[in-house]
Image 1 (spheres, helix red, strand yellow):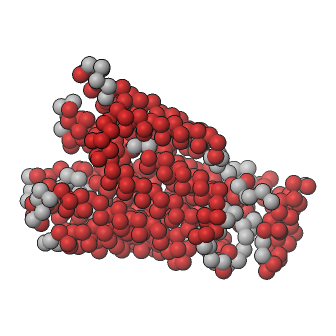
Image 2 (cartoon, rainbow, N blue to C red):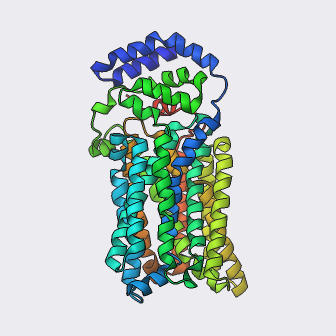
Image 3 (tube, rainbow, N blue to C red):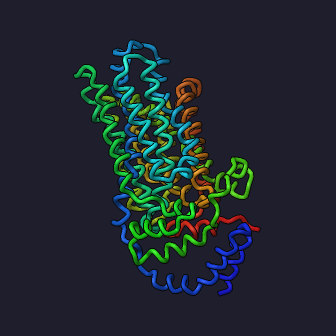
Length: 489
């Protein structure tokens, strides 16, 4: 009893004066809350929220598809548009998306908070449709780059909004499983782009079809979102409590609505009137969670995962495996790891998966360091390099790939969740850009052995960081997590 009073008092201290009435409501309804806790012995049915989650993950499928759509057709694109042999132009076609993604992710929080999660998904689909259509019909390099930039803005907007939406509409018991859908959908998008691109060398102009195909899931996302539930958390922040209650009924079932609304009432009301400033994320009371989120994304990108993807074709080529078969190998292993993560996320927890994932990535990198050693025989070196690479992709997909996006959307308080996700995703894209820009040059200057040793060290640093700073969120409501992470006063 004393614990409940102390919690209510701490909430009272944190809230502005205009919201004291909300605290009194919580205190007056404490008996009701306790009764609801007693009734709340079963978890909400997963199948009610499942269709909404599936529609939201179409954005992640599109993200993966557009990451891989130019890999196979790039040679044909350069020939048709007249920049064959121009490595700078080819690099721009691939990387222009990253610039657009940075812009999209930078504004994603303000868009998601301003127009709601559903409309943010529709705004994400719009530039993808326009950009893909522009790339599919262009006759020049400039048109291709404009199309790729537009697609990139949608790619940047989609992942943070998807992570927000899945976290806010999912029952706590399956939130981790649903969070893994983002990674699985991304893998399926990458593999879909690979398979669609197979006829590109046999059929002239097939690369245009590859771009046109992507407009179908983008249009489906925009249309299907009209019938999906809006985030009850966003509605509640807007003061639309009745609508939030109705959406909870759609997502959780009628018997769980009262408990969900009581949990939601623990959040500060009136937040929508406050503006979250960048300085508040960097220096204010929320600095710790933003620091954890940004560092996790930085470690994810500095672990060497993109370097492995860039270099995988060369490693497989030296083993006599064609590049398209190598891509299938990587895709299947990536998908397998993502499915394992989905099965384990709500059983073992986020922190355990992160720890073992980064530790496995460390071992994998050390195998590749050994494979790059001149003292190891040719066939032994090959087995270590290929095996280490596949093991690295598998262990990444089990934890370091899917967990950070889900974990961040869980640990950020409701008031800053969208904007903090936008900030952390922007960090992700900036580091992604520089890794892609500098990897080949560092490989030439340092050699694979030293470079992979650096990546192994980063992965081990990630293990230490996760152990010291990351809390377990498995099975906890967003309100319980927020209270646990409140700054000590």
